[in-house]
Amino acid sequence: MPELPEVEVVRRGLAPHVDGRVITRVDVHEPRSLRRQIGGPEAFVQAVTGARVARLERRGKFLWWRLQDERGDELGEALMTHLGMSGQMRVRGGAAEAEADAGTVALSAPAPRGEGPASDPHRHRRIVLHLDDGAQVDFVDQRIFGGLWTSALEQDADGLPATPDSIDDLLPADVVGIGRDLLDPAQDREAVIAVMRARRAPIKALLLDQSLVSGIGNIYADEGLWAARTRFDAPGESLTRGRARRVLDGAEAVMHRALDVGGTSFDDLYVNVDGRSGYFARSLAAYGRAGEPCPRCGTIIRRSVLQQRSCFYCPNCQRKA
Image 1 (cartoon, rainbow, N blue to C red):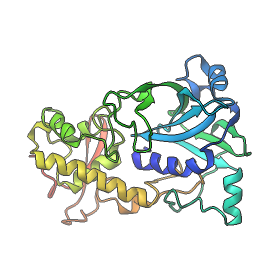
Image 2 (cartoon, one colour):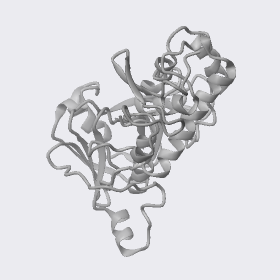
Image 3 (cartoon, rainbow, N blue to C red):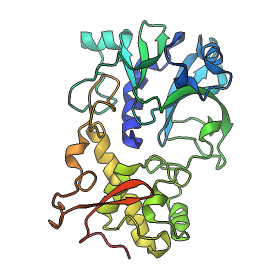
């Protein structure tokens, strides 16, 4: 948490504020948020200061900013963003916000907006990126599991556009081993199914394997399995091709619905760039609902543990085999 829908909501919300903007200054309040940066905080500040943001791209839970020099030529590297367990990207000020206030730009159009109280970002502000229009992008992270860093661009192995929004096959080196996600039309769904059916591992463990299919975490794995009437501990090799496809299609459908309402928020650890929470939590069928009736058959939802992760399922309508 956040998972694919939440990161995509952040990408859509952030893009109008940063696309084409120049990063003029970086304030580092917490060096641990730059622990993945080769060369440390000084190298990070030097790499991104003065760079222009060409566009934002995402694969799975990874978000990155393609960077250009002052002439508009690509720098061959990207500013990586991973939200971890509690990371947020919050925007303050700038031209886009001013235009929205004046009624000339609708910032809510590119991204679904949820509802709920905005969290106070001041205490856990770790990195601040200042833009040339006066906007400030805050990286806020209570638990400091996420972070920012730069990563060189490499060609993707399949030669296809790196993401649905990409104009080429370049993606950060740190994302090369990450599988395409369920919202990527270039994903080879049949190849993923073949790998799943060749393994003995529980299906939920396979869904959480980011090298196989990215972006799925505990929430959308449980919801996708509920939609496909499949238990979390069913071995991959026990699934028919049709059931394996229904598991993936179910997870994809759930994530699309979550996107429509701004993602899933249980507290103020995940919010959009304007501080609003998503409200897909009220639509969950299984995750977090232990002791409540299954929306489909009325049987009480149970909680179990697999590889130190909670699993929520209906013992009646979710089959192991």
